[in-house]
Amino acid sequence: MDDRGVNIDIVFRNGLKDYEVLPPQDVWSNIQPVIRKKQRPLVILRAAATFAVIVSLGIVAYKYSMEISSNLENPVIALNPESVAPSQILAYVNRADNEISQNQQLYSRTSLQGNQVVTPVNTSNIIATVRDFESDPGSGKLADNTARSAGPLALNYGKTGYIDIKEENSLDALDNTSRKQLNRWSISALLSPTYQSRFSSGENEAVSQAMSSEQMVVSYSGGVTLAYKISKRFSIQSGFYYSSIGKELSGISAYSGFEQFFYTKGNPTFEVLTSNGTVLTNNTDIFLTDGLSADRIRTDYNINIFDAEKAGLTYLDNSIRQSFNYLELPVILRYKIVDKALDFNIIGGLSSNLLVNNSVYASKGGSRKDIGTTDGMNLITFSSSLGMGMEYNFSNNLSLNLEPTFRYYINPFNDIPGMRIHPYSFGVFSGISYKF
Amino acid sequence: MSEIKNIISGCLKGDRRDQELLYRRHAARLYAVCLQYSGNDEEARDILQEGFIKIFENLANYKYEGSFEGWIRRIIVNTALEKYRARHNLYRVDDIDDIPELDADPDNEDYSGLQAVDLLEIIRELPPKYRMVFNLFAIEGYSHKEISKMVNISEGTSKSNLSRARAILQRRVGSYTGHKKKLLNG
Image 1 (spheres, rainbow over the protein chains, first blue to last red):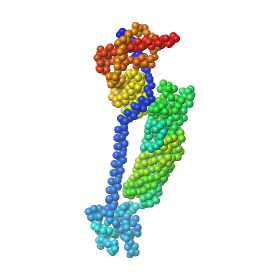
Image 2: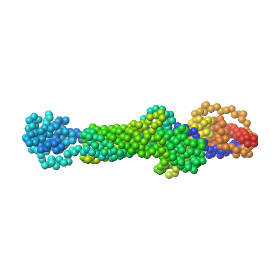
Image 3: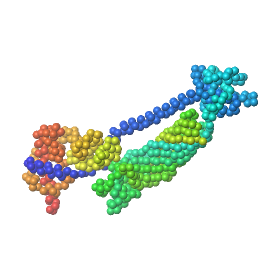
């Protein structure tokens, strides 16, 4: 019996040695979420860290701007009595916090042909040099020591005060550098990585299933804009942006080398159902198979008819990517809520987006193999945007911009029966502006 | 770096493409193993699923000593074993005391007509207790001592189960080949 037993062992061992049976399609789709879920904490951690960095930068920037503004808003104005306009006010920095009350209204007093004119002064962008004063708005009399006081003086007034100084050479030197110019035009170059997602409504079971296997990928958007300052706080902006939007269709394995097989069996076209419409292949060398769903790909070559591995096709990737490029023409309105060295703006606008590239591809080792296009994409879409702009002014002409922006696409990219899918994106645009 | 190292490295970084690539490369071979250890397709699917999750969870522990195929196969076999242990009380060993040993001499039997699919079908018809011992001993190459610890039975029981498994297999292989011969001869 022993020898016979050993023999039967060998029969089974050798007979089953290299035996293979394709598992049901849904096994991988059950494994995938479990292993992905285990990795998710890391993803969440990274997202949280990114968010924390952005918020921290925002807080630091805000505090910095407040610090600057408190320095600037501390009292004191010096006026050139010969001046006829507030723009000729000269500047200086001095603080004597214990004696100067905040938020005092200061006035300039100009003297023209013996008539003194009292004008309210906007202190927000002025650094003042101060001499002593003693005056009353009604009398217009100046303190005797006004012109003789040397160095910064602490002011002590409990009510609205008037400041006056004699013109001095040393102050003239400051004149040109501290004068605030109003540049109405500015040109900006901005670039941002953007995170895409979507809002969806309605019911289409097949598309909903397809959506569960789709991942938005980080895209980019950038361009050049020209802005015109309508008023001190309002400006209007337009230009050109070029943006790329991508989506990864997971679970669809792509193989190349199919050309030598397809003609024997039928139409080589593969149709892949996605939430952006149906992908139609136009590369006859590509074979696609779906490891996650039996319904997503329509083809004459299902897995029971053609086995890519056994046919020796070259494996490219286990996902394919949809890529759309848009040329955007935005019209954006900006409202400046803080006007300091670090400005804060609220940004809102509309864009018309022209589809300039529509492609689907698989990649292997950095090289990209075109597969086809997405059918039925809308050529023009419209999007609205809302954001917060931070603008740090290096000089009168140059500034650095940082603009976290949310964008919502008003009409869908494609018409999906039974569903409305509106993409949205979030990006942090950064760049520089030149004012002239 | 070899291809498998590349794939494992990608899996450890969470690259879904490498994870799926690893799965697709080995799933068919391992599913056959799962079928070999299970009485029905649903159980085989569960073993494959749980086994692959363990493979991905334990990839960092693979030391590149011995073949990777052998390492993942052991994980699948261990998963099958765990499932077997969990269900052990549910299984009822068929009364096979009356199974006669075949007179036929296996050395002279012609098994050439038996395909892998036939062998798999035959082995899956074994009662779970015998199937497990036969698989571990005859296919995986474990000793009775090892099997006794793995399955939590005595060495004697392991030997006895193996013996009975072989007897059943011989009988069924014989009837299978006989049936096939009849079909061929019309």
